[in-house]
Image (cartoon, rainbow, N blue to C red):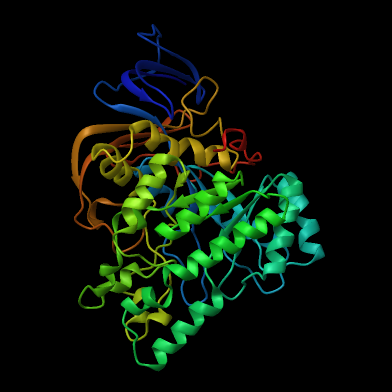
Length: 465
């Protein structure tokens, strides 16, 4: 199969230029101006931006949290991703049975995804407990399974102790892997949750008040210091939500630590006033960390622009408002955590970031496509428009105006957190490995087309700030 994309404005993390892209057997073979090729498929991209397919390195598909299961599986979730201009996801595996080994969840998640995903995918390992067997097993997961990143949680049922976190950091440093962390101070959060429930303060706003920014910031600073003690082990902070945490990250980066930061559209565009919406609508936004006060947004945007935040991901974790979220209607602690966003990320960041002048279009491509691909080892096959890369390509029409509503989206969930936001610019075509799988917001791809990617180790560190 041969395809040519002609007359588009090609945008990479570093360059913007007019050109044509010639694709053969799913691979970019040539890039040039007015290429003369006799191709089976010709796509005229005049007036469109041509970007690498988005890479979302923080999703939760098929996630079972005990009281509910995320509404998107690897089929519906990746269809939504593709329709929003994302062509590769790295999913955070959920916890398995108590005491299970690392291979257990790897096997479970291969079963979830194989034959269902419509775009290429990989997984992050998950650490539920730390002992010598787990530390030894990491070697096989990194080098044989092609999963060089693991997530630890400093809260929830399978939280890792400081000693355990230090051992994980040391082992992954040795293996050339990456420790990712959900940073919240477990004891402080539980103290406030129990206090509010005892006082009868159970409406959605108390979810935010029970997990104040300081709980996140303390855990961020603790992990930064543990990473320093672990011979400057690489550390990746997921879903950063606030200004103070960013300051700690910047201090670490300025002193030469390999600390990466990810934020999400919800923290850039929504704030804690959402929890006060009438009729328990605030339950839609229960996630951890919670939405913060609005002033934090300007600092996060600046962190993206300045390079202290390297990645925009989604933490896509969809639970139905009219079913799952209603478990929290009388007590916020009973509400499953999470918000959908896998489809909304690229359109939101283009419209709210690029079109409103908060970040350049190259920075948009960098944080949504290229740098996540580098940090998590799928570059240069993903996240790049260059010869030899997979033809994972998205066309954005900068003049297309869209109002975000649940009705135009494809995730298997009954709401969007961004209902009613007016967007300027929207993806109009998504290509995965040379095959057009979405056109004009209609999925035309194939269930099971997506392949598991054995990832390489971090390719970004040589470019670290």
